[in-house]
Image 1 (tube, rainbow, N blue to C red):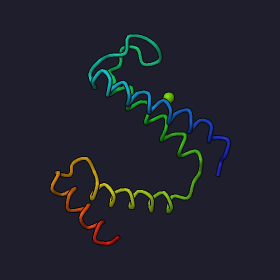
Image 2: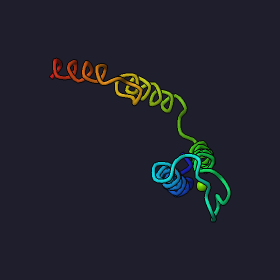
Image 3: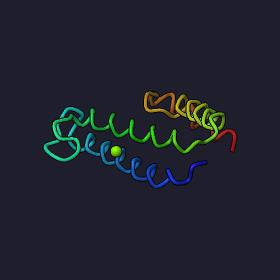
Image 4: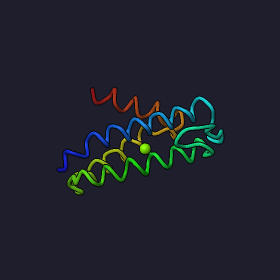
Amino acid sequence: MNVEYLPLVIEEATEVIKAATKILRFGPNRRYPSGDHAGETNTEALSMEIGDLVEVIDRLGLPSEIIERGRDKKQAQLKKWGPQRSDSELDASLAELREKS
Ligand SMILES: [Mg+2]
């Protein structure tokens, strides 16, 4: 693992959070008036920041098989709890959890 990239991962993750927050506050199509993303829409700025983040994550040199395991696990969680689920599907997932506990 290339630990020297961790500060950059933290920095870029923070920039992703900031760009995502702009979308929540001002919408996806509002343009940045100034700064590093001047003239870009909030969606474009978020996309750029995610690109920055993916690049520095790749440079960490983490084991790809474990990253894939994490992605598989997250995909399963999203199937159960993702935002596209209807209220009745979420209720069914909660009921299933209650049965198991
Ligand atoms: Mg950045």
